[in-house]
Amino acid sequence: MKRPTPASQKTGCGPLIPPLSDTLRPLRQQVFERVRAAGLIARVQVAKDLGVSPASVTTITSELIEAGLIEEVAATREGETGRGRPAVALGVRAAAHHVVGLKVSDRDISAVVVDFGGTILARHHEERRPVALSPAEVVSVIETLVDRVAAKAGMTRGDLSAVGVGLPGYIDTASGQVLWSSILAERAVPLAALATARLGLPVQIDNDANLCAMAELWFGAGRGLSDFAVVTIEHGLGLGMVLNHRIYRGARGIGMELGHTKVQLDGALCRCGQRGCLEAYVADYALAREATTALNWTHKDGQSMIVLLESLYDHAKAGNQSARSIFRRAGRYLAVGLANVVNLFDPALIILAGARLRFDYLYAAETLAEMQALVLDTGRPLPAIETHAWGEMLWAQGAAALALSAVSEGLLTQPREIAATA
Picture 1: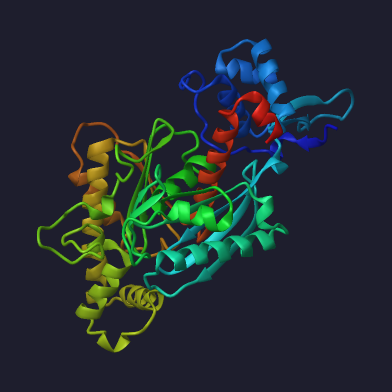
Picture 2: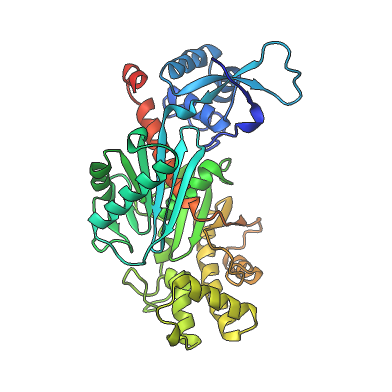
């Protein structure tokens, strides 16, 4: 039965890829992704956008409806009187699948339950002690978090189709292996396989900065852009890069480690064990380390990182020159990093993203001006720079997009008779 839904209430999710720009994927997948991105869309518009015949679209959408992946919706438009037969549009069948996206960081964990249409149904967040965990402990954290957020959505683990996990460090997404992470006490951990075995659900893992970019690509400012960069500045410094509407991970899956590019030989010690990394000058722990030394705050040992940083910010805002110089120095290093991103990739947009994004001195006009001075002078406008403070759920939402992508691609690349029974 068609159910009336105001067209203005369906915004869709996923990258808004321009028509005819990506024709390598199967047409069946392109049709589904066009419907998903639009929220609600007429068959004739799908055909027009993809440059194919309406008959082809009708055949494919009939298959997708039969498989339970999309549905017909009676879409009422603003200004309609309600007389006559309502227009019929296509939309993703939201109840077809549900996934969990979660982030495990040095200081907190967060999770969301998302339906097949990209709507968040439940969320959960809690703090954690900043200590490295064994692989078994991380898997237990993942399992507990999945069950807690599923319960908030009124679901059990059996109602879920997949789980996406984001964490800091060097992550080989294709193999599901964590090569190194600040939250793990061991290296080369096959975390995806371990979590899949424990949960009984397919688990995808990725670097948290990549998932921050994926959140912007699926739900935020990057939906309509082919190329953009997301720089995350919190306990670490991350870079997520989108090229041609896709997350770029490098040949071995571990590229875009902006935080571990070197800005000073034999410089400050980074948490990765090397010296002179950009992260060691601009990340939370770097600011806290500088504050402890420059402001003689050794008596504050044992305080949480958040409290220490808030105190540093308050001192800077009150006019403390030493506190301001810490932010100013970090801002100059950040300018170097941003200028390198522009010179290397020339993105249309750079998004500074994270849960904090409130330390004015780190994102001041002086920092952006210095970045502009370091970028090659071509006479052309520089990329736009925006700051997005989404809150703790940003990475979890990106992890949910990772899981949704895996589920839909798996279904759409199966033989038709298998997909129809999934």
